[in-house]
Length: 332
Ligand SMILES: Nc1ncnc2c1ncn2[C@@H]1O[C@H](COP(=O)(O)OP(=O)(O)O)[C@@H](O)[C@H]1O
Ligand SMILES: [Mg+2]
Image 1 (tube, helix red, strand yellow):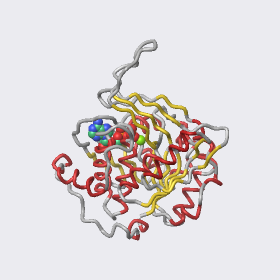
Image 2 (cartoon, protein in one colour):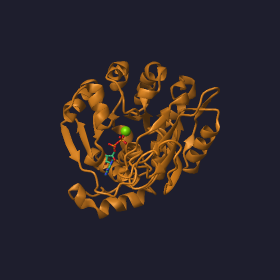
Image 3 (cartoon, protein in one colour):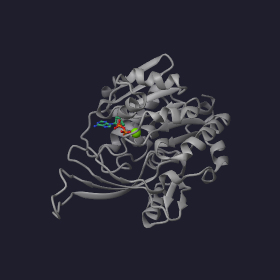
Image 4 (cartoon, rainbow, N blue to C red):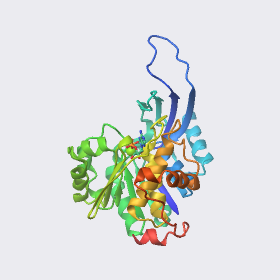
């Protein structure tokens, strides 16, 4: 299956464990430090490639070393990156001191993230894709308002499945209005619990998801960290528990979930099975440092799920239809 990811690509520098930043010019010895390709588009792209999808990734970076390393990281994972270099801007970057319990405070400079334009998109590639994934419309500035509605409509007109995730933890309710023309073309929205509560100003997650469906979104998959996820669609509201795992770092869990979900859809699976593959992929991500940690490939992700199916109420991976035949997906 072919997936085009559009949106946030971030150069992440992560270290662990950081119980607290030393005072003054104090020094703290860490067990490990890593750099990764992350962001709701870039991190998802890497996970998708690991799970066997053919991935093109589009976003905006700066003309700097971090940008060149980010491209290298994507290419090393087999992602066909088409990142647009914006002269005079910096590559979106984050420093993440990971706490001993896996929590991820972030120190972020968004740089060129909002500099993406319609000309940076290869529309023909989108037309030929099975899935268009939008990562972080809340961080894309004008692009989200001026281009995204057209891009999503264009994708749907070409039979391309559309998915979307949000980036910022501090997302505002105004986003619902700003992206109003996007919602009806968004088949699957995958926010986390904080994000959907914030944009809908609604505490109850099922109600919040129904509000987004009323705006035109097809199915809403709310991720809830260690509490799992909630899938709300047509005549459907189902909770999926998370696997009980030793957490190292939850950076990129949402991206892992999205990638697993998309690959499940690509195999022609039902919604809940696809969401369970997302759950398995994200559980692997949480067990290593960095958003690209944990997932090796599809076979090992399926094995992890199968071995621990009891934790998902005994649900097992369905028989795969032809993974490389996307016809079933495009008919959705
Ligand atoms: N502590 C955890 N233990 C097990 N699974 C987790 C944990 N944190 C996240 N996950 C898995 O990752 C998914 C996405 O994580 P979440 O933190 O909700 O997303 P985001 O990274 O977008 O904030 C969850 O639905 C869950 O399946
Ligand atoms: Mg997320």
